[in-house]
Length: 111
Image 1 (tube, helix red, strand yellow):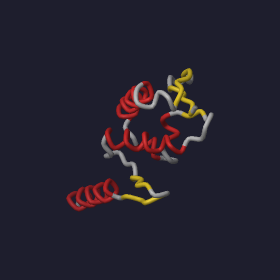
Image 2: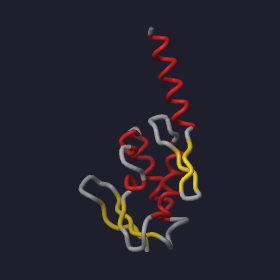
Image 3: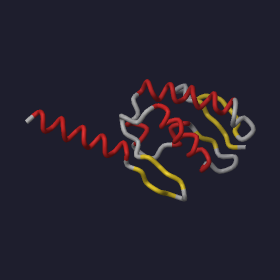
Image 4: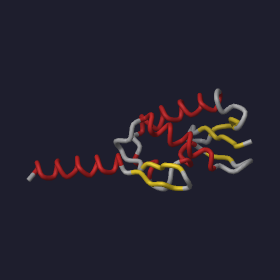
């Protein structure tokens, strides 16, 4: 019985990880606990294009609904650091780094 459950869980994770939705001409992934850090970073960098001018946001705002909770805590921290470096470098002319929330989450603003 356990082998069947393990096989089903593996199959569901594999399907969910490879599941792609085509939205607004782009490709959006279903975020799961097995999504790689690079895939999460790519998703955040892609989703930031949907932030309106002068709108403030957190990295977690770049993920839909429950997706943020599916990301392991260690990945969330690393993703935040990667995104901050992206904003400081490549995207420095497009976004402004503001203060932090009481939960130590970095706040950004689209210029």
